[in-house]
Length: 589
Image: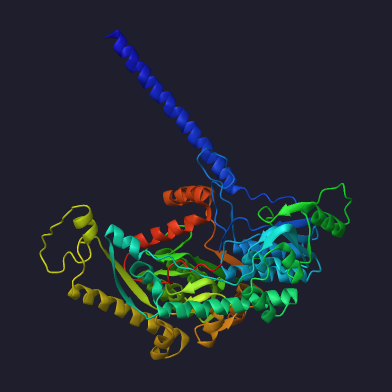
């Protein structure tokens, strides 16, 4: 008995000690996170320095705090990311920074949309007006990488490197045959001839209408892409198109032959050129600061006093609060209400970068934009996407500005109701039997059977009603008839450049131009630009970091770019209610 109590006491003591140790370790980890997230120490910029930009990291619309970014802990990834807002602001700051003498671009590629790339490109073009140099060099360049590098005063490529220039393409992944094999039938209820978000689940190839719209917006984006490169490299757009059609650039030597690069050099030769520009001795290193570490920001106007608020709305539109990288209907509505009541905020710019999502959440946000317009100016600036639900929440604004390559429109709605009858009954031998007190009691919960024709009619009626409301919101906001909205709607996707001609967008403009327009509407001469939502404190950042987001960080570490396909499938499985969103994952390369 004495031995028994001895072991029990030893066990209890061990548990207490282990608990205390784990608690201490936990507190240590939290302290490290807080220190990491809360650190705002700027990198010391040496004199006669070069700003290094590679874009070899995730680019979000607005910088998001990542509590694991600078930590090296087992099992945790260190994912680097930066927002477009900070990229542009830091390039602007470098333009007037006396210590920065030039920019070294080492952009092989960029995992982002063309509107984001164009915003960075225009910041670089503006940087050049300071008479500071930009030199670009890479072992290899994708088309998106070259689009940015083409801005440089001098472009160099590795003698054995590569430069991709074959024209733009966009592909779609279709799931119908895979779903048929596992026994899942996707029942579709939609409005819009071009509303092709549902096609991957019911077809194995594009419909004629979808192919038509993809050809249209891809051609529009390609035109902007060629014209911008033409302006930078002094090569005609027709020549560029001919070079791409013939796939004439296959080796590094071809890139030099057709004037895409200035010369073929090894990295040590490029370093020597930069040293010469800086007046450095060959034995000295080039003083550099990376864009990620360069924490300086461009001047945002007068301190205190009147403000123009830039409210960022990016990601899928979801019901409720949402998480970082999503537009929660409740959260964004609350932000708009608070800015509407803030007497210091005289005008609002709603920066939208969204493929859409929940129709209900979109309607709630639309309501707040409409109410805001009655008390102070509110304008919309569109990023890579402002389509379907993304356009819905923009429609009530005083003015809408877009990038020429923005994907917008897609005014249509759909619902997906899966039937697992074959999967359960035939493949797995599982059967269900429901007892109900009313005819339609199990309509939206019993997925082991297909919808009846009567049930389809009921749901389709709801989808039709939401589409009618959507069209009215656009018609009222843009001051055009519902018939005109319907004629350019039907789920069709347009570029920002095309949308201007259709009266869906007022004009092609940058975010800075949208801010200036908002200030002008508010009759402001001196004002400060403030960004919202405000950054959370370090503890709030840690506690709000969802389990799903941590898992995605880890998966990204393992799968790289392929993780986006997994994320897209997960979004589809989590959809609820009627959706107003752009077709699938639009990827242009």
